[in-house]
Image (cartoon, rainbow, N blue to C red; front, side, top):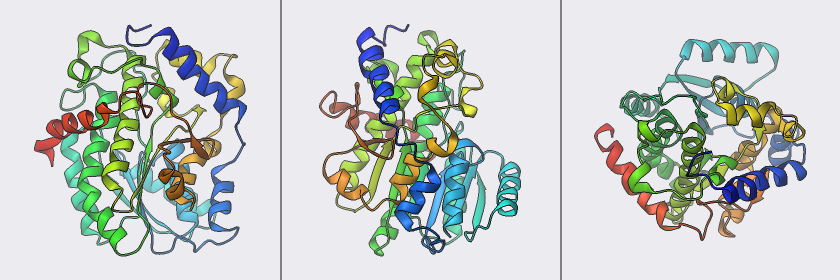
Length: 342
């Protein structure tokens, strides 16, 4: 276990959150959540609304996009493999009726230089932006892997690229909100945000190859997602843009393909199998945060973290009241790192 993960942070914070999630799982699917939020059979409910979903060519992102398309939202598939996404969209529409339209745009979150071209391509479509869903992620590679800019890939993909993407799209989100329409940012974090006992921003941002531990880097990147959400909530408070960080649950997705021994235990051990969710259940909370009318009120009451389709108490270093100073510090470091890619 990495020196950045203490016994307390692992057992009390991380495992404690997973146990609470498993014990309180309402067994809701993304389909059921959409029905509750929009009305059963109200398949034109999202007409005129637009969503960007990163990592939408598989697993949680694809399920999220499917639900939005079904209710007449225009979904922008932000993906590394446009051909694959196009084929998936055609397959979905052949299997069930979907009134929403779609666009497929290339972006590689492992390469910061692809973010600005993606945003420019989106802006040329002349669409509003109601929902930005920062869904894509990388989980616990066994060995250090560098992004195109040399950053550790979990830091680059899970946090830094989404930070830049969100910053570049913020003017469009604000413009959409000023028009009177809803505008939300949904960030896929994780219970893994509670793994690390502390985050030394001066030493581990960005992570160094010689200190690499896949589990610790994953936990720190997910804590960064929560720090990012909290700082966005503060900065967007007067704009009326809702920002949510989501723990989807313990789900077998493409993220686990190259996972290390720690993630193998979590996903394959009989000790944790009772709390596993399938993809429709795993996507339910991010669909809730995208569509529920309750979210703005939940944020006003101090919520920054959601799982099991409802507001929850965050734990670990990124929880409110623990290291609140790191919200702004991470923002400043991230701004400096992405400056030349704006």
